[in-house]
Length: 318
Image (cartoon, rainbow, N blue to C red; front, side, top):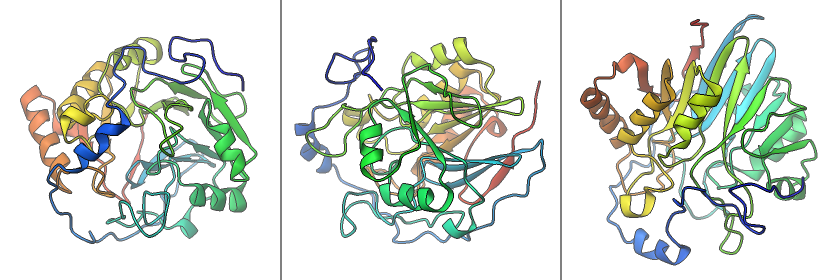
């Protein structure tokens, strides 16, 4: 796909058009000096088999971190699948998984579509993507610029989208939505590929996976263009220290505001409690989400943290 002529590409690199483009890479060592709350080495998880769904049912299962299984009748979708033990370019170092996947890889149903929000290691694990390609040969939809990486891993059925574009080859209506983030696999490829989220239209339900994102005006724009949103999947973790993370990762209070901006009927909090990417404690995002909901007067049943291995039914609410 040719590079786009848009307000978020300068001819060489992508960027967030509102100017919230994060800290430069040379600030990373300072960020890493921030004192860290120690995580447990393991948090017990009892993996479960995916839900049984009927032809008109829509079910969503939280596999862990930002990985979700969406079952739409006989069509099965995986979002940001990561089954690796580490979110890292190497197997011997980097953030290690403390919660096992809530669905074993061997228990996955036949996957017909994979959605990839961006190329960071905690969202884009080439080992997992290769294994899915060997077993199921799914279509893979990703933001523009990610095709070369995926094809270099041997994955051929790839469709790249720009923000607001709808996939043409996917088995369900899929639209790439804006996010406020960045991309990189190493020190020299920052923002060479785009990032985003996905609106999934499924049997009259609308599920929004927002990807990795800081809080910004794009939530109101998504609501204006694509509402209603029946279920929003919003990140609530990896947000400290704020001086470094604010542009690229929401904290729980900002996630609550995003839920309100979207007008989502329900939201689930993701991107917490699996890989320690930042200094906060393993369950701190859940406590902070509870506090933020109370402060804003949002009923807890409207927005709760996703639980690893738990499946929910996405009902028609209109």
